[in-house]
Length: 264
Image (cartoon, helix red, strand yellow):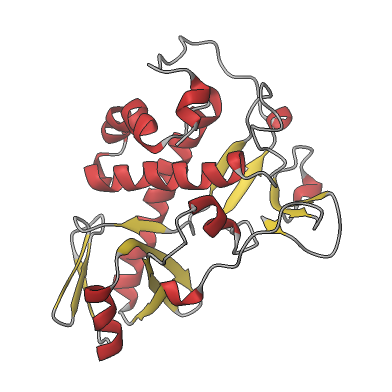
């Protein structure tokens, strides 16, 4: 999602090869500079570490990435149908079902997938510049989010650890370990700053880890995410009028009204 730019209004760009399908899914959104400005995210808040591994190690990470995307794609329709994307409420709504459906991923990775869907849903559905903002379309049906196999994987202290110069990461086939050599200034950041996120990203030469640190005044998550300017390549937003009718079924019971659940 591009925030700002030289034009005005909203321009939706179909994904590649959309011309071969009557149903067009939109990968990028350009919103003109008549909308609210977004402060740029401080690049110093991130530490990017390339992973030097073997082809077998990278294959295990690709398998994990694909499985993580599968869970995200299983959660996304529930967000679309229930209008619930608050992380805690969504966790209670889907956790047990996702654990039973994807046992190989483990409990903590299912929690991280819930976080991933909640995080990007907040950007697409709550950012004031988004054409799908619920503030503009209060009663309108929500779009469906679809995650590609290249979607990032979120880690935490249960699924990733560093001991000395050894990095240990969860995969579907057990832990995989990498030699992690950090400069003294990089090591100091882990002692002096608050680490808020660890993300595995696909890179041209393999994979890299991005460590996200908190920065003073950078506590608005929607503002931070949108400052990157572009909806990530791994995400496709399918407009509600291009979705097939939902099968008749008993609606999911949610303890709170959907609009309350959407708020953080």
